[in-house]
Length: 223
Image (cartoon, rainbow, N blue to C red; front, top):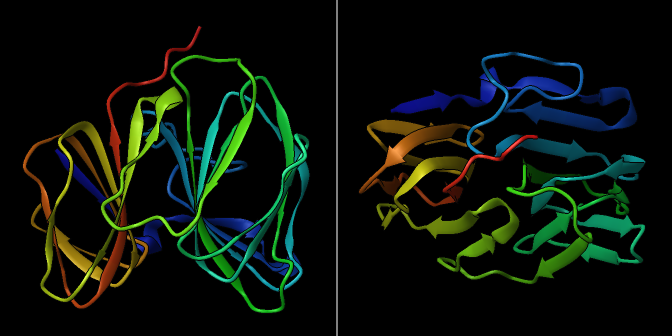
């Protein structure tokens, strides 16, 4: 089964007056749709746009895996574990909140910042928080998120190039740039497809394209 969410169908949030524009794929913050809470362990896929100097003040997280992909600009990250890092396009950032962590995210530069941030619920709660940045992750290199039994695949494709997507009980495909044809659908920038029991799925670029694909194998256990 395939469900396609178009970019224009995302819920718009954030605080535009403060230079923060957010486009949510799932229920988030003050927006709640009981039929759109999560997909497998994926509970958020937020497209964030921050003006120069804008950002999110220090705030807490626990029992969530936060993966960030910078599209344009530079993201300044600081957390209560002492990490002070700048994340750039092509870098993958992971924050495992565990039993609790606080962090700040902001655009410390003068040019606009755009990034995709994805939240996954871990299979088990608690544990120590941890943090990692993978610099310049290569195409086709899978990034395993062990606490959530999920793997992120980054694909950058030339016009007409095809790529196999992973077989998985839950497969989430988000188009970062350009357009692709997959599962008999054309997905453009900001569009996403949710596929259950995905087998032998391919994506073909229409022009150059960049996409993120989550291969997910287990839903979280609550209680």
